Amino acid sequence: MKPDMKIFDMMKRTALLLAVMSAAVAAFSCSCGHGSRAKAETELDDSTKTALEMERKRIEEPEFDILTSLGKMRVRLYSRTPKHRDNFVKLVSEKYYDGLRFHRVIEDFMIQTGDPYSKDMAMVDRWGQGGPDYTVPAEFVGEYVHKKGALAAARKSDMANPKKASSGSQFYIVHNPENCSHLDGQYTVFGEVIDGLDIIDRIAAVPVDRYDRPYEDVMIISIEPVQYGPKVTDGAAAGPDTLSVQSEAMSSEVAEPAEKDGGK
Image 1: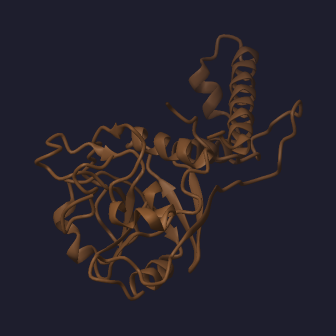
Image 2: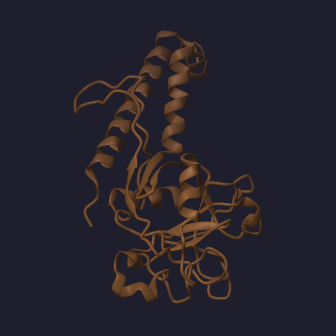
Image 3: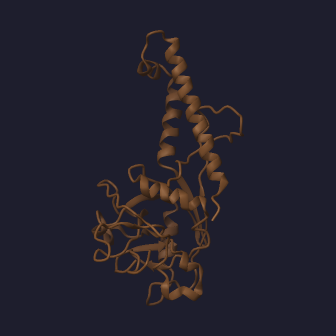
């Protein structure tokens, strides 16, 4: 699948911005004679330092709008789970998630999506087993817990997957943290919903069959990176007020949110 060039353009603009900022700090350091780089940075005006810190944060913790058939959620990915963050960025750039269903919905627990098989009704018996031909190593961080809106990676059961590696694409969003707390340290939490928590409630409330599949489709229409600040065209100088926000793209069975055994 061809990657979305818009994300790569933003990555290019971000790289340009960082290069300009580095050059500016270096030039300021030189103008201070024997002054250190650290001193130069401390002498930058407060608004510039704030803008630089905001840009650094947005690169490390990019945000995305998930547009569903029941409304839009905004999510932020975490900096301390870089493998999961970069994998999500890559899949979004490929439009991997567009057109997928929330194939598993359990009210007062979680809502799950990310299975490419869910695009095809003819494969309904295999929903929960699909994904790319790789897993993502577990990245457990103590402060990242299953609070409401937490974004976490699905995976196979412990017996089939003792290292608790994550699915290459399937993820779930916590509805009720009280019923998910036992998953802390067992499933990688790599982001959170920062706007649109009510959309989780709407999705979690839809009627489902005995396999937890919604009777009426709940779809991911698109996932798009959030962009901040003025657009920078190719060749234009970037400044600290330009806030593009993407990091560079790298390269479920149980009553738990996981891939069914035999899946990816």
